[in-house]
Amino acid sequence: MTLLLDMRRIEVSYNGRPAVQDVSLQMNPGEILGIVGESGSGKSTVIKAAMGLLGKGGAVTKGDIYYKGKNVLDASAEKMQKMRGSAMGMIFQNTEASLCPIRTVEDQLYESVIQHEKASRREVRARALDLFQKMRLTDGDRILKSYPFELSGGMNQRVGILMAMILRPALLFADEPTSALDVTVQAQVVKEMLKMREIYGTGIAIVTHNIGVAERMADRIAVMRQGKVVECGKKEEVIRHPREDYTKRLIGAALRLRRD
Amino acid sequence: MAPRCAFVGIKKGEAMEKVLEVKNLTKTFYKNKIPLKAADDVSFDVRAGECLGLVGESGCGKSAIARIITHLIPPDGGSVLLNGRETLDLRGKEERKLYRDIQMVFQTPQDSFDPRRRLGDGIMESLRNQGVSKKQARARMRELLAMAELDAEFADRYPHEVSGGQCQRAAIARALAPGPKLIICDEATSALDVTVQAQIVELLEKLQKEQGLSLLLICHDLALVQKMCSRVAVMYQGRIVEQGVPDEVIRHPKEAYTQMLVDAAL
Image 1: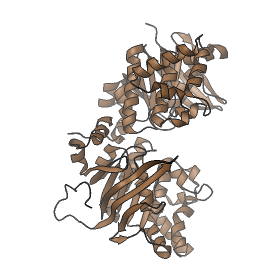
Image 2: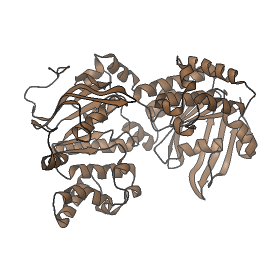
Image 3: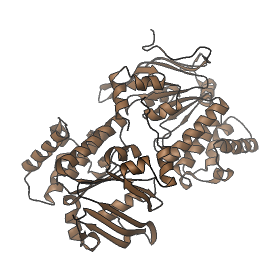
Image 4: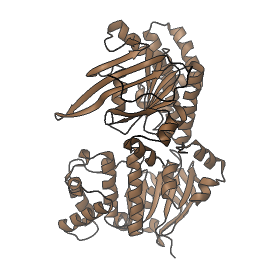
């Protein structure tokens, strides 16, 4: 089986200074990988590297990144643009900030879809409503007509999931998708992302500092610290029997609700 | 009018002195003429040396309560008593004294400091305003930094030069400076990394024990409340729907909203 994502010993530098070193991560199709760590550990940088979104001054300086066996780093700018969205989708921490404030959700959704495929407004609308229904949101119509600022943080995150999933990417990167949300809304968004995997078999790489979220969602967990992966393995093993001291500290510091 | 919920779980012989007493507080905001009740007959109290947790989702009114207590916004009705004295009608000198008695620690420490002034200046400001001499204020500021477990050199740093956790420690030192009776922590740890959060929680617990601080902890994390608080009040849409000992409330939530909060915890 070809790996969905295969990062081989990559190094990412910003302005010549390495921010991520010797990171290797693999994902099988349909797998959920949780990447956890503190601020500045390089966890977002890793997924930005795969998406080709490092921006000015940032570059992958060592190693290779393969998406379904093809080297992403060799892809041309146009090819990358084609892949972003349709092959690899992304959800950000604050979807509202990533949207245009003066255009409706529907307009922006339509625009993003026609970048990748031929579709009429009506088709896009039908697909969006269908997806909303799968997320068990009943007022999809109202959401589509809204401007981003008219929606709550939780609703905007759902729009983010919708925008990423409407093109049915095989791989979804989620960068702290629930960190800005209330606990109750967070639980719903986590549920909805799991539902997307259930329906479409999407592989998800979720970057989070919340070990609880990673534990709920992921099949495997990679722990990052200071630009390196310190531990990576099956969720149960990493959480129940962490090998590294840092992982133990990270897990020990997370507060858990005692229900008994 | 009697408070909506009776307090439970207070052991006999425990200190009963109430530092803060909030009674029947109401506040309505209007957005496009649509009323939004931020506080709907809210009553609770914080006793000497205890930590009371106020939990609820964004927009439920918990921060509005903090702003009313600290006189940042006026309520529509009700009363706020500090050590048994009504505070809402205090003005001038008396009101300024109240600002010393109740201090706050905010969610984003970096934003709560003046970006163009050093942390030490921010910590000393309240002392200087009270008329403490520069020399004495400096000495006190160093003590406060030590209490917050920061090296003296942090006094000369600017907010953007330190990490979030270090800045929050400085904010705690600043809150301690005027010798407050009550500190309100409004989501003081939610923007921090888990390991840093654990350190700040440890610091607050230590200060509470050593200084006999009374804390009002506003947050949406039930696990944090369970760790730090002796009692918890759950707020939903401007009302306190449930109050009690955290373990009790978490194990046997009486209200549907509390149940939802418990279920949502990961």
